[in-house]
Image 1 (cartoon, rainbow, N blue to C red):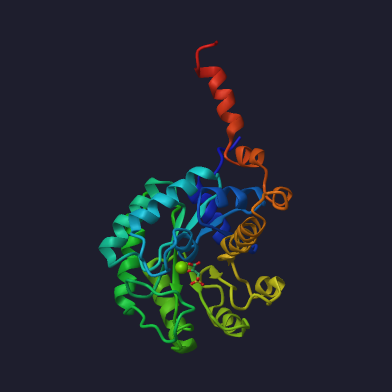
Image 2: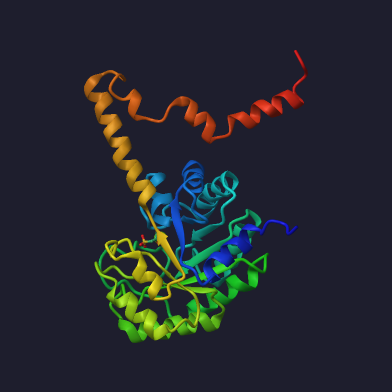
Amino acid sequence: HRPPPTKFAALRNEIRSPTLSFLMEAHDGLSAKIVEEAGFRGIWASGLTVSAALGLRDSNEASWTQVLDVLEYMADATALPILVDGDTGHGNFNNVRRFVRKLCERGLAGVCLEDKLFPKTNSFIGDGQPLADIDEFCGRIKAGKDSQLDDDFVLVARVEALISGLGMEEALRRAEAYHRAGADAILIHSKRSTADEIFAFARHWAGRAPLVIVPTMYYATPTELFREAGISTVIWANHLLRSAIVAMRETAARIAEDESLVRVEGRVASVKEVFRLVGNAELEQAEKRYLPAK
Ligand code: SPV
Ligand code: MG
């Protein structure tokens, strides 16, 4: 009988296994539970959606400890491993060291760091954002790996060269440097509507380290093609928050218009369902055990 893998080992297995893995976005404890119930094996704690759920922009407006608090609720809410969108690492190598230690202490299984500058800007805004110096970013990667408190903690290095218009050669050069610096996987990002440059990168990369992708913009690409290209992990990066926005807006509009709940009641989760999701049944059992009998 083998003990269950730690969350760190579970994420490492997902990233390293030869079969295609999927990470589903969540942005708080409740959405993390919903990802788990849907049958996913890992979670992407998206910087964009954690920020947006706080009413903030994806520009490091929430302090990193405020984000850490959200991440702790998420880790507590689910048995699934969480890959944290660590943005740029919130500063230089020294900030990365403390950030990685705190993630490990709170049971976050991995972090993705992108080769940009603090404060970051979302990749889909503007064109040609300045990138970090390669050697400086490699220092962040090394510092992160040297600070992990569990051997299986996963550090994914994210290459923004294609997004920033610096071309395939620069993207490959950066990926190679980040791999040598100790990154466990490479996230190659693209904002094109087709996956051509992702597939070209994967061909050149030739499996030197696991590849992670985020097909938000090339969403129409059949998943089978990602499998054939040898991609390790697909991140569905923001779709729970985006679906929640549509649902919440529709419900708010209907109640505002009707001044009544009649048309809405059958279309929203029941109060009982809310109780179930957050585990009220367990509390009832605990009360029987710990409260004095009446
Ligand atoms: C996120 O989900 O915050 C990401 C992915 O970093 S993207 O928005 O595509 O940059
Ligand atoms: Mg992000």
